Length: 456
Ligand code: SAH
Picture 1 (cartoon, rainbow, N blue to C red):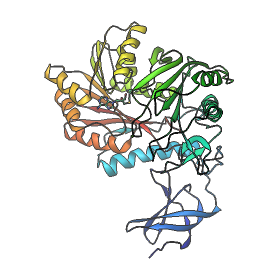
Picture 2: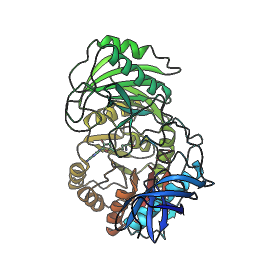
Picture 3: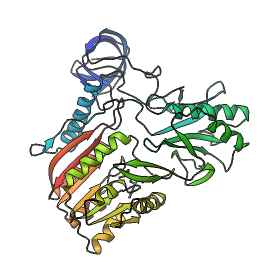
Picture 4: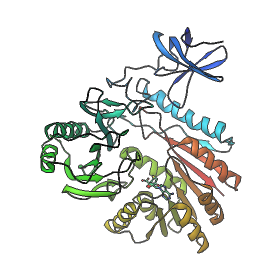
């Protein structure tokens, strides 16, 4: 029997969907953080449960051929990236494996009839994120800090330049912290629900070069707001133009990134960007895919899967600012988008106008409610796109989809576990799995996006 604090030598034989390497000792799976498949390691057991154990690396005896030096100096401490020490080609193989494991082990799905493609990767998997969210807080010694949470905790790991996003975003973080120091502005303390500045949120438009900085605060205003604006506008921003600075009022006790209310401190209320040749306005509270280069590949896959011929009626559930709807509109007779965030639907309607698209209509409300209402009205779409948040869809919505009986369902998912659950429901309801395409929207992390085609 394995015991805590024991030391072993073992090979890493597999990778868990958390990114941990897996060794097998006495028939028990031992999860090792920051290990790489193929490593031969000396490990120390840190925790033993009935069906698995955890261990930490004491020494890498022989490194795996897949191992590479992580580019980021805080990789081992920050919870943002889990796979930065693994060769990119191997990361793509692992992500296909994560999807396969989820669909077969969690969903018990039969994939024998489905085409399962290799993960679509990036040519240069660096600085791909157009959105960075940095929590701001206090260190144990009382000094201000900002960065990312450490894995499985709310301890902030300070960073000077996160390699997933534009350097400009990290520079905005330094500017906000220096403004706070100079103006005696407190950081929010989660435990006490006291203090002012909670987070900095920076969004950049890859093609428009417009940037937005949102400061989320537990209050209505900041002292000397003009000084903050000056500091942010003084950052050397290269091609980027900081077009919008916003105060977001977030005085709730929950941990949502942004509250509902915004006040514009400088410039515009929203920025715009271009995707798949269309122009999109994005407000702070609206969802917008974080990796624009890969989003184009994802949407092209989804629209290819749908085989639109210009005559079909298309329903796009969880449509955000209408990106999939409007990309599909060019090839459909009628598209209908449904989304719960009101600001996002306002963006979607504005986006249809901006792009001269007249065959798209949008509804604010939950997918559950609106899909049922559309069904009651007799809507029978030829194609349904569904792109829910991480928690996946729900049985009310999935039943409405089954009852509308479209010829094709294209499911876009950012969470293989809930994807497996929902696909199980849809296949039990009479749909066959035809195509599965993982897309790497989040290089260096364990996250994987997936586009799936189901046919009636
Ligand atoms: N298809 C869009 C958005 C996908 S993200 C894109 O590619 O950009 C998922 C979206 O679902 C978010 O915009 C979120 O606000 C929305 N959402 C979350 N729960 C919902 C619900 N119950 N009903 C409808 N929309 C919901």
